[in-house]
Length: 119
Image (cartoon, rainbow, N blue to C red):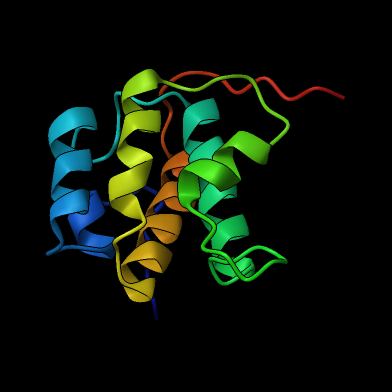
């Protein structure tokens, strides 16, 4: 019988070894606990949107993670996190997907803070 954990593991479990990820852990904790659930979801949205469009806009020019974040219809997120977006552009695709996986697990299973969703 398979047993599943209902708690998020530290970020290095999902993605590790690249300096931008280590910087995230240094700034926000191994489970990114210094970020609010809202900030984690906005980061996830920016990562997923950027991955979906293969890092380029319709003109073929490079489309950065910061550009993607700036186009999202959201409230501002933590300034330190916004400053980290440029370094995340340098992550390998697998590391970006690992970061997405970590963010989903943390928002889903961690009990830190509340999430306000407009209806």
